[in-house]
Length: 211
Image (cartoon, rainbow, N blue to C red):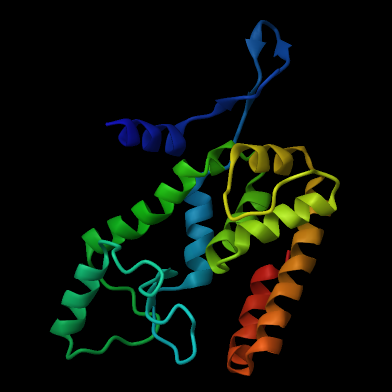
């Protein structure tokens, strides 16, 4: 029930800003980052089914890796579809299964709620930041290093917490996004430097980091 209430709140509500100015006896409302927009953005970049040679995530669906998330409940529906179609699924196939669609959205909504992405103020900043969180295993560490570049003092770990969200909101969005892009690019080039099999993914990674 609690999660259902949070879902409804995230999808439909406006959030009053802290210390919001009062105008004509009304509290000024500030729109926070919207899950639906970020979810749509992630899917536009991740696509649907993939099982590409040398991909560290191995078999993936909507950006969800079977290697990293073997117990995700969506796999049972994907495997059923695969069995029904001779054991093969074409690249970027969107499997027509409403339960599978539900578990994809639930996967990302769980991240959104647990890590409090709904507290971010700017949609573009949210989209680019959560994309890095999804796309790279050390994504949150890169986010924190970027914030430290801007003068904040964060312990660099892979825990997305309220303090990190707060510092993102307090940072100049244009400077933050530029610094984040630079760190993403260094991260991707270093992957290829260490492992030449990853070079075929580089152009896509770099396009995702563009702002």
